[in-house]
Length: 115
Image 1 (cartoon, rainbow, N blue to C red):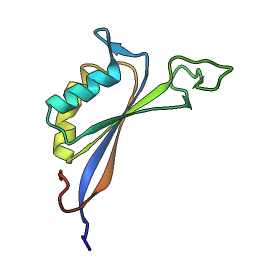
Image 2: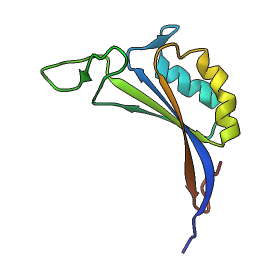
Image 3: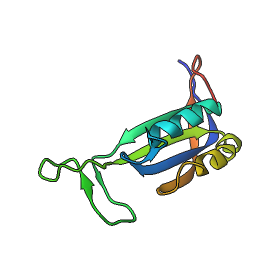
Image 4: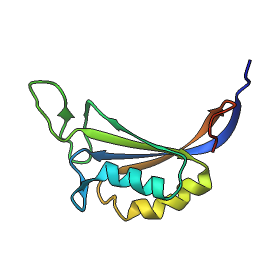
């Protein structure tokens, strides 16, 4: 039986709208590509089904609402130093949205790429 190893890490979550752009490209895609270019361990994009932000307008996938600007979360997990080093690159493109940092534990198994 493989025993997992754990280590501390930092989770960066960026909450934006799916219609937010950076130079005619979806903002979430720009964030993922910048994270990749910076050598971070990984990034994933999650599309929300309902939410609201600073505008207090609720965006939802429910049929009667037909919202087109759903919430999107970009989640990146890596070492604290690498995530904090990425923040200036993120600050160049995120002008409206919410960025959070949370300490977390990464569980690794043999044969998997580790942080």
